[in-house]
Length: 272
Image (cartoon, rainbow, N blue to C red; front, side):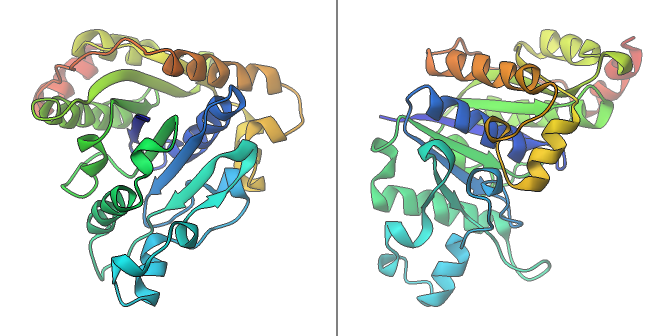
């Protein structure tokens, strides 16, 4: 049975870049990995493949939404380090529900029998308001992971995601593996707010990814950090290698205890 990870975070927080490098790190440690992009902009797997691949919604439209006519090779490409990639895609803005497409993608994986064919399946999922479709990966995941930065909006989103994981854990196996601190800059507070947040809700920081131009350039180049050259590469790679080893080794997990939406304004505002 696959280790299934559901990675969430606020829009623009760096989920896809972080997810792709984490998938690459696990693959380079010998795991057979499938990364699934669950965002209508379908660029989660771009660092692994170097292109915007055909999406599930693209393929379904071609067969008039007859899911039985879709084959595995129609939607899955192999990218860096042998990581298999799939993009759910979504309808044009204002014309449909992206969450519905994610739900259909989760069903398609079951049709293909893929939940048993990989060592790791990583869902990279849009957003912080987790509606039914976008929460579907949590029905299958072993662990939820939240990506956040050391700022209020990011922490507010992380708190809502903790609520989603807490609620799903009542009926499913999912637990929270922890939080990945992204764009960590010692000159702007480091991880101070995040450390207070994880202590409050009952989880921990499992990785600290630095704020570094090499990461930004890798995203623009459609490459993982492992494929880049430049100053600071080892410092950028270190957290991904450490997280890969940790997650592949049956990590500790918790059921988070999130704050009420209104309470978090008072609490975060009081943290120094």
